[in-house]
Image (cartoon, rainbow, N blue to C red):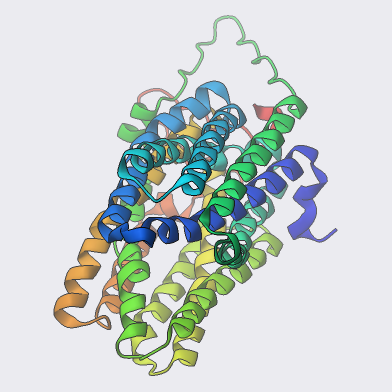
Length: 431
């Protein structure tokens, strides 16, 4: 079996991959059906924006609690509960779409519940992988879960579009509801297959036990965590504006691309990201993985900066494909580095904190992109976003603690007033 497929030897991980791929396919159908349903029968963009906000704000707000819940009750338990709630909400949405036009009084509460469910789900979806795999398979496992998401994102819209075109939005929402049921069922299988955590080793008499690390303590004492948060915010400062404003504006304006051409640009990035994710899963563990991941992001920034100046859809698509390759590769490497660094008992909360930093900056990025594109056109925003990404990564590389993240035998945790225990090996036996 190739290195990239080695994690599939583990039964619980196979359940996870199957369930999450199914759920992501359902989400892609939902993403196509929702705007079609809302905009039909004079629903209008105002209602669509209201529904999206009702989804996005609770999702962001729930991330911190989702991380805490994941650490307290184990990731698959929280994820399964969130999937059950989302299955009920998606089924209610399917019923509403079958019975009549979009109505604010129905859609907003459903969107709030769906967004809250995803916010609770996301931290556990990152924290669960190290509990199911030995450390040697961790990077390949992250590549498989990320690659499944990207593959569903590529294939799902076509399925959703066909369903909506043939039968309207209600069946697409029903497919989404069914996908959550499948995901919850596979997570239940993971729960029953997971071995109980071993009892902690006794502390010899006369030796003081090291205090367990807390999130607040790590935030105060661990410079590398502070750098992670700062890099996450800075690196995402331009991403929302690029995806949501600059690329469609570039396609519609200077490139004079058709809707199909714009779709091809989006597909080029997604295909590149999938390729980069597969490459990361096949790669051997680097001696200095944080430097390798950072280098991938710097190459991504370089190609992103030149995107609007290449003059045609084919060349722009090629540049976006390269940025996707580097983004997919770098994300898998750095997610794995982070999972190996984090104390296992705090992995959910730390993941929620980083996701909060990423999601929280999205509205700022979109607003910044809108202002720049409105005043200067789409082209300047690409080098601005690339500069923000490059500056963030270079800031990280300027710090020794960042460069040493993920090095063999290094936990990344520095001792403070009292020693902070290094995280246990990221495998199923350590939880």
